[in-house]
Amino acid sequence: MLRSLFLFDMTFWLYLAALGLYVGYVLAKRPGMQLAPAGHPGFGEEDSPWAAQIGQVATIVTIFGWVVNTLALGTRAFERMQLSGTFAPWSNQFEAMAYVSWAIILGYVLLEFRYRIKAIGAFVVGIGFIAMGAASLLPYRYQTAEPLVPALNSYWIYIHVSVTLTSYAAFAMAGGLGLMYLVKERAERRGSRSNFVAALPDLETIDELGYKAIMVGFPLLAFGIILGAMWANYAWGGYWSWDPKETWSLIVWLIYGAYIHARMTHGWEGHRAAVYAVFGFLMVIFCFWGVNFLLSGLHAYA
Image 1 (cartoon, rainbow, N blue to C red):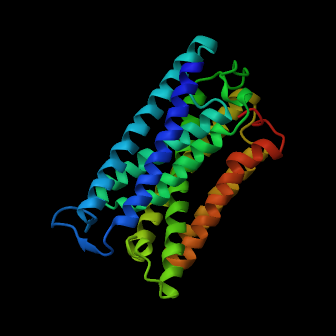
Image 2: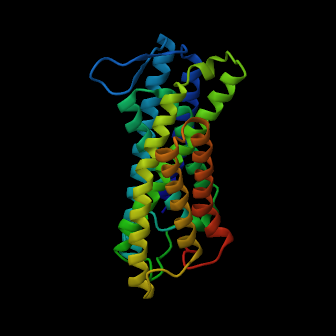
Image 3: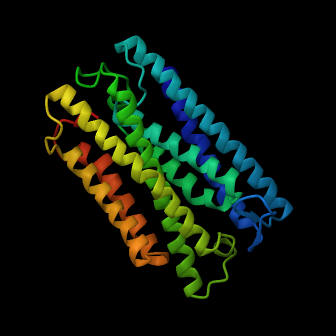
């Protein structure tokens, strides 16, 4: 047990270091962007030599932190296998938060490699660090791998929980990008000449990336809800019981469905889309965190 907790602690500090490096990168970066070479998707960044070195170290530390996070989840999976015969390392709130952090950082690394925009790390890696930090603040009894209740000790936990948590990670990325959009938009509206704000991607790019993150999370959450209904029928004899977690998952799905509908039919982009992305992420936080501690239900142990 102590082995996995040590690795989770290492993950926390590595993500904190990565966040600090990305903030330092943005501060040292020359403002402005240039089009990427032909045939390569996304945008290239114009970096000073000092900023380029910081950015490279930030990426290395982020990847190393993700590897340690992976080892932590793998070690916890082994511990769970010894304890209850089920190796899903997302069987309580602490493990679920660690997995969401893992998925956020993985999504960010893939985004950075595809679009070569390191400045986003100052916000998205920050969300992953906060998720890991929130997990570390849980009391010790929530961090240990207790035996699973019978309803959870099922193969359904491998697919339902992992898919749903991955959708939360995508929404978290969209929320971080929405916050970045609002910060940059406000600074531009006030005529700010801050190098930090000027070094961020242009508003159109931020808006598009946030939309793509939501388009990843939305079908995953739909799939997760369907799998959860199937698991509920297997475990409790009914597909839907209006349990608080079920209800709020549906509410979150409808919130993002309304966003996609408004964007496709009414041209919701820019400021409104960014505000909605942040609002949607706050609803995800309540569904994921608040429901477990404030509302009693069948998912109170999750």
